[in-house]
Amino acid sequence: MSGVLWATASGIGFGLFQSLNRRAIRGIEDPWVSTFLQLSAATVVLVLASLVSEDLSQLGDATGEAIALFAVAGVIHFVLGWLFLNMSQMRIGASRTAPLITLTPLFGVVLAAVTLGELPSAAVLAAIAPIMVGAWLLASRGSGDVRIERDSIFAFGTAFMWALSAVLTVEALRGLDSPLLGVTLGLLAATAALGGALVARGSLRAIRSIARGTLGLKLFAALLVAFATWFRLLALDETAVAVVLATNLVGVPITLVLAPIMVGRHLENANARVWLGGALVVGGVLALIAIEG
Picture (cartoon, rainbow, N blue to C red):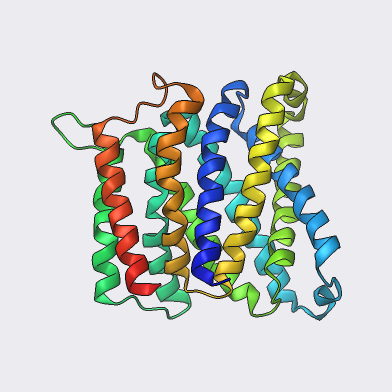
């Protein structure tokens, strides 16, 4: 399967995850605990997948730099990226968070150009323009003066962290050409880092107070995102960073449709402004896929 198709599958999985996660976090007050549950479940799934399907001797042949880069990319993507995602969904909702993180390709284009020498063409930059306009509409208050809401910063943080982790992943794959082992290494490092932080904060006890139904929904959402992240690395192993990050955005309309259904339209109000911003984002994504795909 081509890199673009892997990226599309990843985006669909992530869109489903965001919708389910929005409902699950209603029963979890601490975003650190919420993120740790996602990481733990995803780690278990991908460790098992690695043991069943991968040749573990590849780890012995891998360079130390590649292993370190996968670990750093995992902490950046999963600990920081997911933590900001959970905080954003709690503060502004999934319908507004999902389109805002569509700035990920913009960050990715800049970072890839600087670190990997992947220079975007004028056509690519033109395709990214409506994505930026759409994100601005979704982040602005919609009153007379156009300002960015303070809580939108968490969604922007997610976008930057995910772009940075993608660039680091491309570098890491040169020393360990196994996307599944790579993402598993990243998850193990991220889970250990966040688990240590929770122990230091004394927050692990909060897991016992989570309702069983909420916990089950959260773990199922984590299962979806585990496979979505694996597919993302498969795509990065075959396709340019900007194309993968842009194609991943097929999850945006999925979230816009499903999030209000999952938690109620009174909490996730996908109004005309949201849909206009989302339409600009999707239009830019389709143009980018047509140019680069």
